Amino acid sequence: MGFAWSSAVAQDVTLGILRSSGFPDAGVLCDAEETPADDEELAVVATDDTIFFHRDPATARARLAAFDAAMVDAGVPGAVEKDIDLADSLTGPGCELTASPAAASPERSKLLSVLLATLGLDARRHASPKAVHSLLGLDQWFCLLSRPHFSCFRDAYAFVVREPSELPIAVPRSVVDELMLFCSLAPLLTADLSREWLPLITATDAAPEYGFGSSICCLPEAEVAAIGRKAERRGDYVRLERRGGDTDEPERTRLGKPHSLGLCKDDFRDVLSLKATKPEHAGVMELKGVLLTLRWLMRSSARHGKRVVMLIDAKAALCAVAKGRTNAPAFHRSLCSIDALLLATNTLLRPVYVPSEDNPADAPSRGRRRRPATRRILKKPGFFKAQRSMHRLLEEARLFDELVRLGRPTPRRDLKASLRARARARATCDCPNCAGRRSPLQCEASLAPDGTDEEAEVLF
Image (cartoon, rainbow, N blue to C red; front, side, top):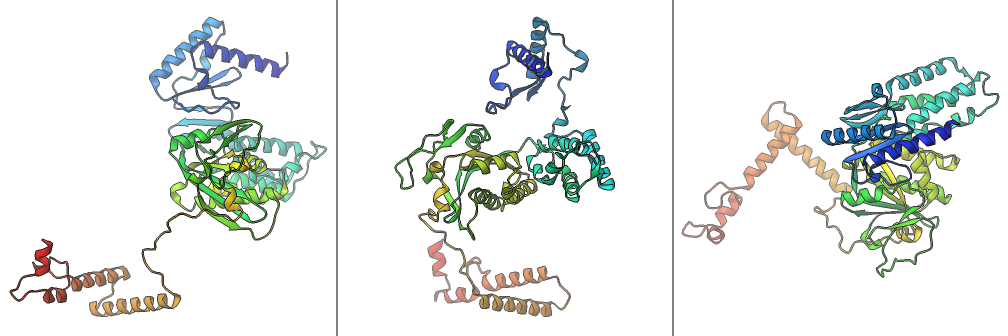
C-alpha cells in the first residue's frame, strides 16, 4: 500500500470517528470549505492526528471524553503517551501555536537550523543545488505563516533546478542575498491570530485608457468578516445589486458560485481617481492599483494590524497578492512593494474576486469619479506663502519681546504659554457684570447711565 493511499484511509477513518463523537461538520477546518463563523469549537484533522480548539475549558473536557469514547467504539487504539490535553501552547508540524497571545510562529529549533545553515552558506559560497533546495523548502514552509515573505525569493528558484543537482558549485551572490534577507525578516514570520477586521470594504481597479480608481464602503465588522471568509476560494465571487442607477451594467454569465453583498455601486464612496503617468500592461496596472489603495488605507495608524477585505476584478493580480509570489517578471516589483507594506503594518489582505461589471471602482479608474453632494467646509481660510512667512516673523517677534520682558532664559513652550495667558487676561473682564465674557473696553461701553449692564439683564 502506498503512502498517499494509506494517508487518505487514515484521514477518512479519523474524520468518521470525529463525526461519530458528535462533533459538527461545520466546525472542521478545511481548505475546500469556508472558514466557520463560529469559532467557539474547531477541529483540524491531519492524517491520524486531531487538534481541537476551544474557548471554554469545560466544553473542551466534554469533547475530548466523547472523542476518546468514539475511538474505543471504533476499535482504534490511541497513543495515550502522546496526548496533549487542555494546553495553552502546542508545537505542530514546524510551527508553534499559542493561546495567549493567539499566534502561530515558527518552531524555534527549526528556525535556528535555518539561520545557521544560511550563515554557513554565506561564509562558504559553495553548495549543491540540492542542498540549497532543502534550505529553500524549509524557508517556504515558514512563509506559509506570512505569505509576504515569499517575495524574498526570485533567483533562488532558478538556482535549485540546475543539473547535476548534487555537485557543489559556486552559489550566486543574489541567491545568498535572498536567503539572508529572509533571515533578517524572520522576526516578522509570527502570524497574529487575533487581528480584527477593518470595518470597511475596499475596491480597486485599473484601466489603461485612464489610470487607477479606488472606492470604499463602511460596514459592520460582522458583515465584513462574512465577506472576507470567501477570500481565495476557487470559483466564488461577489455580486452587487442593481437598483437602476446610471452606473449599473448588465450581468455577464460567470463560472462559479455568486454571493450577493446586498450593496449597490452608489453605496460606495470614491477615494482615488488617478491618471496613470504611462500606459502599462493591464496586470501590472492592477497590482499598482492595489498598492495605491493600500497606501491610502495605511496612512492612518488606526488601520494597522487589521484584516482588510479588497474587491479585485483581475484574477492574475488577485492570485499573485493572495499567494505572495509570482513567476511573472513584470509583476515582481509591484508585488514586492505590496508585501513590504503588509509586513510593515502587520496587515492581512483578504482579496475577493468581483466581476468587472460589479466593481464599484470601475468608474473612477476611467476618470468618472462620484463626488459627494455636499463639499467639506474648511475651518480656517488658507494663507498665501508670503502671508505665512509674515505670520512666522510676527510670532518670532512676539516671542522675543516676551523673553525680554521676563528677563531670564525661558523655553519656547513656556514663552508661548505666557503669551496666551496675557492675551486672555487682556481680552476678558473680571467684573461681576460680564463674568469674563467681554473685554474691559466693551464692559465700560455697555454700562448704562445708572451703572447697570443692559446686555447682562437680557442674557440672565
